[in-house]
Length: 444
Image (cartoon, rainbow, N blue to C red):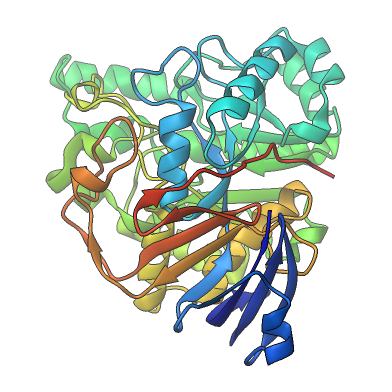
């Protein structure tokens, strides 16, 4: 593997934006500096490329995706969905365990790694799922290659609900990151019965946030936080969706937190007013809620109470998204467009670009302790995303996910992911995939 110097770039890293250059040697960043490189510096590289003012950021790290592999590969698979990630500037992912078979054994984990080694276009890792009876597996797992333990406190795809209090206490006491899907199952069941009584089996999709309600989220999240505080757990709350949950969080520095939280791009972008236009295309668990909730989530990103932004990327075929609140599948395929979404919100003044980079690149790496990724620093792996202020429209033709649809179809974004380097090699350029080496993530 050779060397390349990327000059005349607008670099955003560690809260600062400056014009400068980045040198890459092999799989690693060799130097990052402001200004113009000297002739001697340029002479030390095999290739020198003038980026003409394109923005350069670290590769995005998405801590929550459902790539559907194995067992649900009619919806998506590691090959197709990792290419969607790559096209969106995402260079590393953490995949969830509710596949078929579920990733709740070390054998299932090894099988996923073997598939990723063969098929993944970006760097990978896989959560190990908790059940009511796999505590011995969780105790013996190789956590240098696992981001954490995924616990479903509310049911979702794969029926992995953990509802045994003794088992939950044991899981929360393992000394590992416990990442939770937090919705209260009893409240959801009660709300479902109420909706069926009112509408029969054809419940309108706009009722989805009333079924998987604010109360279901708040009660479950409060209970999870109380358990974590009692047992001194390193708790990570996935895909928060309500203002009430943000009020439970702290804005202390990330390195001091025992309880952290994620928000997904769609909860920052959509609100319940969009059900009339998009219907089941934005049906997800937890549900998209009110404009006030969306605004509170945006504020919590800005004030540091929420720690990272991810996608919960969850493809379904178009026919699986038909029907109302009880019939249409829950989940959105957004990994290709999360960075353009966040950068558009930055152009609108909702966030700064520095905040976007912090939430999508730096903080996921820090929160999980990922080895040498998430920053444009000398010695880090050269996972680099290059974006340019060139508008593009979301059309089925550009969608890389196997499902070939998006709730964003027809939207015109003001910025384009122009090129992505993974481990020092160009993996995506001008809408074309390039052969390269991806690697498993390693955790400190």
